[in-house]
Image 1 (cartoon, rainbow, N blue to C red):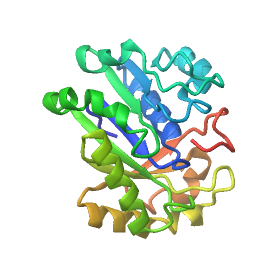
Image 2: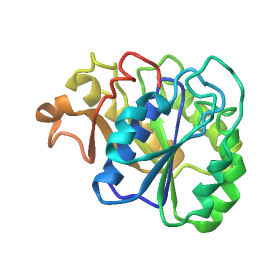
Image 3: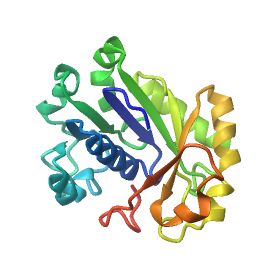
Amino acid sequence: MKYKRITVVCGHYGSGKTNIALNMAYDLKSGGNDVTIADLDIVNPYFRTKDSIDELNERGISLICSEYAGTNLDIPAMPDEMYAITDDLTRNYVLDIGGDDRGALALGRLAPKIVSENNYSMIAVVNMYRPLTRDCASTVQVLREIEYAGGIGFTGIINNSNLGVDTAAGDVLNSVAYADEISAAMNIPVIATAVDKRLKAELDGKINELFYIELQNSLVNKEC
């Protein structure tokens, strides 16, 4: 996958955006890049990127997140380190943004500088197997609300339609038309279909631009 200096990852609750953000950070690091992942979800403090801190430390990936991440304190505070995202041009950053328009408000603080630098991707993670994004119309509505709140338009889509550890190859294949419909409605490309590595043998060559991912131990059976 090709990356810009800043990769912004957004999606509705349960779309799997956190798992996608983590795997993008891993992919960037494997390419020899200095990488920081930033959890800017100020709405849902109970499940965070910080849950994968051990994996991040093992791979040498830095983390920016609220000091209240991983606690039961619902305080919408962001660390001062978040401004390094736009000020430190030597690193790649992957931003995990909140799952609705309220969650995207944190992105709005950084949006002017991100857009001005013009070295970013704004990725919509979609999942047709979640209750509120089962069809194109409902998914596009959610994504438009995120765009408006965050102040940045989406540049691409990752189809992450899955049923967690119960996902079969057929479930992924059945979601391709859904992602293509969203692509046409928003006039942005489907840049990848995310697939658990265990399905590689069944899906190789059947879908363009497959992005094989690791399901994080901390994310299995959780909405992320």
